[in-house]
Image (cartoon, rainbow, N blue to C red; front, side, top):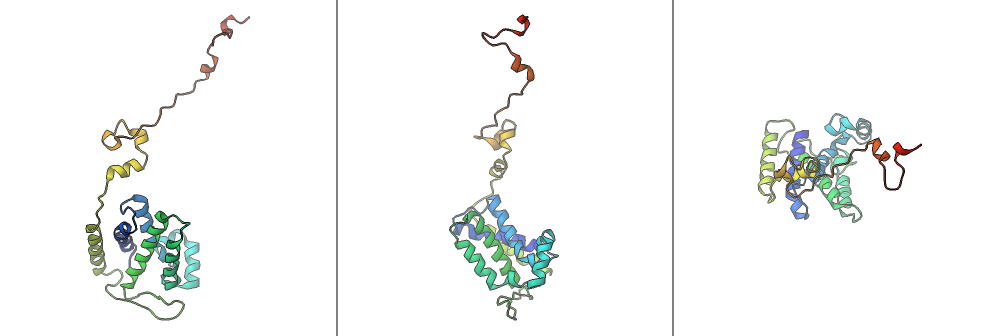
Length: 210
């Protein structure tokens, strides 16, 4: 599927999986990690979205494993599960990445190109529902995304998203509706060099020095 479809399906997968993992579905960082994970398998394709951004790594993966090779195989699935089960890694990071990654494989499984699940052995597994880039692809993606969003009990809180950026530390007075309950940043007193020359107590004033 196209990169835009993988982004949408990665988000949809996270909307469904997050509540079952006890994590917030609409938390911006987690959602971003899920979307990034949904693009990650195509690191083996130098012309993909992620491949263009890490071209040397992508070119090497393409030369060694080919497109839809190792990164789209059962080996990658097992690696994802192993990462998710690691207790020394933060689940808030690993879970969205793994969910997004697996959503990519599930999406590619629905195309005629399918997946080489038993890589390095030959053979392709597919449930050819739609061809990559066909008019039917965005329809399938829209239906899945709508279903996932409809089953999400959370609702997007734009004010919380703005507060998470730290903007209330600077503009609390100007944005009371958004920043209610957030303390503004303390105003720093500007330093002036003549402050250090102020006369104090028993010290002799500079004007009286002979």
